[in-house]
Image 1: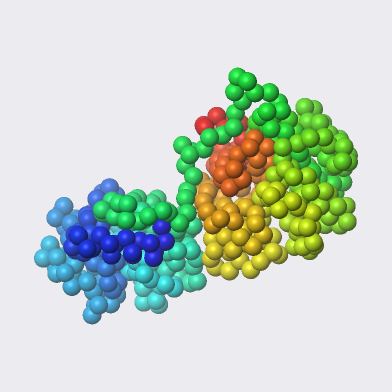
Image 2 (image 1 turned 90 degrees about the vertical axis):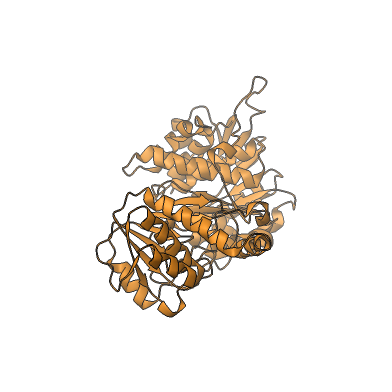
Length: 454
């Protein structure tokens, strides 16, 4: 994905050899083709000022040539794209004042240069719409670089964008299905600002013919308490089912864990746990002195660490705990928004906040949410787009921490490990739910079904 600044710079370079109208015609034709797939009889264009409105008008002209009735509401009549408006009128398009009853709406109100929510006149029209909406480049009223909303905006069934995806297409659920139209930007875009992991990108650590339980990775799990034994079971479940070669559990919920997973090596004292290749620490350990001592010990063991839940709260309350960490020890923290806010302000730009915290603490930040953001100290960012919202249930994050611990123990780069874990976790939620709510234990049970897809 590329930021709006990257896209605009790429366009300016292309304009040196390709006339600007050519790119607009390519974009508009792509919108028209996607709109035709809805098989509409009547299309309504919502036309704002500038090139985004021009794209919509040219798309309307192409649809008219297919025999579709196309009406347009000009929200800024004096600033409508002149050539697009002329082409639209020549093709037989009509300018109207009210939406009527369209089968499909094309949102050309504002493009990637737009900031802020919809203006009142546009918001009033959008509120009345019942037909599906195709957004040109991005849903109007949604920030194209952050996916943030601060007022009325468009919710699209489909967003048609040009050259490459922008951050909004991964960060906002308002986009619907995203289609990318090639308009000739090619290599001028440069390196993407962030990436989305696809299934084909994931090289899940699975045993080979020369592996044994040690070479595949031993995961240590320090979680749970007498108050929260379920956190211990769930985090351990994530580690066991995500193909750890062995799992060692430490904590006061050892009996609960062993009843559920007899193959797990359990102990009550972290000093007796034995050698591991990664640690998961935090879920349900409490925020008292015992939890603080446990976290400090784990941070000092020199192996990759996933810190979650109470562990994050302890780091916020006791910054001196970072002194227990060897500077070269990889650490991944997995906060949701409220936990993140204990460490640093989050604001409207979740990507920028995650990057800033990752650089300041020298950690990988996995910022949980409907679309999970993973940032590392070097500034790399990936986004995991969840296929559903079924993960919004108690204990789901504990399962994620266990999955991540297993991938870290296998030696996967911590930034990619966090991405792998987020992807598997989100898809396990969808598999477990199958259209109905599912508890965290069912999400854990679905992990092998997801790993089989890799």
